[in-house]
Image (cartoon, rainbow, N blue to C red):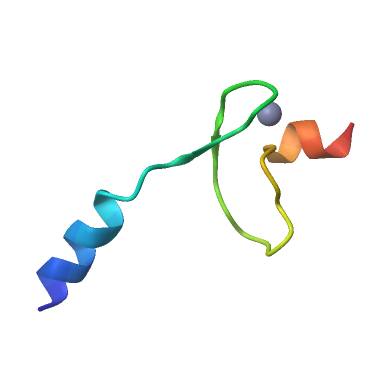
Length: 41
Ligand SMILES: [Zn+2]
């Protein structure tokens, strides 16, 4: 059961920043399509 959940998250496509192409680590609700660095701008 637990292994299935891990596999599920592994298979999720990573969010990619539309500006720089970096993988986005989601920590907030309102991240949009940009990474932390690009959100500052
Ligand atoms: Zn970015």
